[in-house]
Structures are given as C-alpha cells and as structure tokens.
Image 1 (cartoon, rainbow, N blue to C red):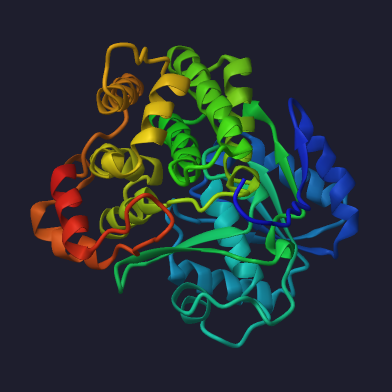
Image 2: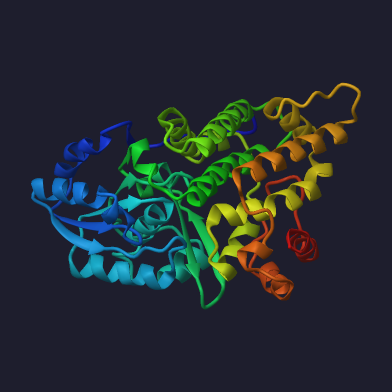
Length: 389
C-alpha cells in the first residue's frame, strides 16, 4: 500500500427490493421543503415518481418540482435549480434517477448559499464550498456513476465546450442516504444499461491502472471487475435477471465510493478523454468512455506492462505460458474488446458524432491527469483521438 490515508463514507444505503419504503425513515430528519430532482420523465411513466410523491406527501412535505435534468447536466440547468432552491427555501434535495441527477443535486447543494458563480468556483478554480450546503438524498434508477455514495459532481458547459467533474473533499457533500432497488433499473433501454455497465468497469480500471506496489485495493478491484463481466453477460441476455442486476448495482457503488482508490495514485485519463467527447457531442457518458478506452490503453500499455499482464491473467484468465509479457497483456485487451463488442458498446467516437475536424478542440477540452503510467502531452492526446475515430 502506498502512503497514509483517512477513510470516511457517511452515506447510509438501503439496498434491495422494496427499499423505497425506507424513505419514510429518512424524511423526518429534514425540513418541510423537498426539491424533487429527476430527469426526462421516465420515472412518471414507470410509476416511481408517483410512489416517491406519495411518500413525500404522507410525511407532510412540500414538493419543489425540479424535472428535466439531462444526461449531461448543464451549467444553465444548474443555475435554474439553484434559483428554485433559493426561492422555495429547500431543506432537502432528493434526486430520483441516475448519476446525472445525483451529480446535479450535489452541485445545487454547494451553490444555493454561495454568492460566487458555481461554474467558476467549482469547475474552473476547483474550490471547496465555504458556505452552508443542503443535504442530498438519492433514489437510484440507473447504475453506473457511483454518485449515490461519493462526493463527485460532473457538469457540462456547452458555451465553452467543457465537461468537468469536481470531487469535493468534504464528506458532507456525499448523499446523506441512498435507496438502491435493483428492480428500479429494469425498465432502462438496453443501450443505457450497457453504457452504465461500462461506466462501472472503467471506474475500476481508472483506479487499477496505476502504481506498481502490492496493493490490497487492486485485489478488490479484480474481484469487482470479474463480477461485472459475469453479471453483464447474464443481464445482456436477460435484462430481467434480478441477481445479475443486483450484482451490477452493488458493484457500481463500490467501484466509486472511494474505497478502491485508497493507497493508489489513480489515472482518470479515459474519463478526461471521454468527457471531452461528451462536451462536444452530448453522447451518453458510458459510451464516450468505451469509445476511447482501447486506443488509450494500447498506447500506455508499454509504460505499465506488469499491471496490464496482471489484468490479462487475473481478470480475463489469459494463460501467460510461452508468451512475452507484452503478448499476454495485449491478449487481455483483446479479450476486453470482445466483451465490449458483445455488450454492444460504442467502439469509436465517430459513431457518437465526433469527426476529424474536432480533434484540436477535443484535445483542448481534455484535462491532463498525472496519476497513471504516462503523463500525456497535447500531441499524444490528439493522436489517441485520431485512433478513436
């Protein structure tokens, strides 16, 4: 294990069938005004919205309706949500949806009582809140981001063509509680399901592909990756398989609740590349990650050959006998590619709406991280994007 660290995760989880009933246990802890945050309206069609509203009303809450959170929540939508929370004196922000709704709720939380522009303060200067924050609760209906148990928040600015995430340092930004019922995820379209699955898998990869020490976090990561691969194959054939969907949901939470990052440097360049694509195309987050992953990993493989070999043998069961380390590592990435195609993931950025004319802009929109096996320069980023077309 590398270095020293502290670990605190205050989010209380309610997991399993009918876990929405535990919202009754949480609501009395907060004031009367609840800002109900949700997306495009699918929760009204599948009945989840009605169930949540019924519980809110039974607990005497006043509902501030805040729908229309898009898959890549924008700074304009954030400002609208801040205005609603201020005008209606929100006491609790309740996000009902996927990671975008949870991310958006956290961004509203840190901004309501702050006079600074939220984009400049949190996503350009990466400051921490110096004002009182609002509590956030989540009812998860789509898995992938892990936002239900972390302090991260990703916001898109279309004007500047930037999509930026801020992981807040203070654990008070984490949701106070999150409700995870796997059955709520079963109405998702197939493409959204597999995009979420790859988001989970890549979160683990971003933390796994760094460092060369013997780290307990890497052993946990390998187990999580094997679980995601196995359950994804079952869910891909039968999306209604409860066991598979529950395993996927639980893996998503543990992939990004900060546990497996402990003692690690972590990489996050796939996310930086993917978020640049998302800022330009508004493509589904998980698909932007799948479209850029393999060109990036093949590029950095020579710099982290030992870990890529371990990935091949421990996650994909590649037999290393009679092969060079590089051959074994490349077979691991080939196995990963086959699995990605099996799920139906996007394998290049062209199918997401990007083109060669965007390469310079995409490179400019990509934040360079320093925790992986190779710190990229702008020309390397451009070449990787070209390989993603």
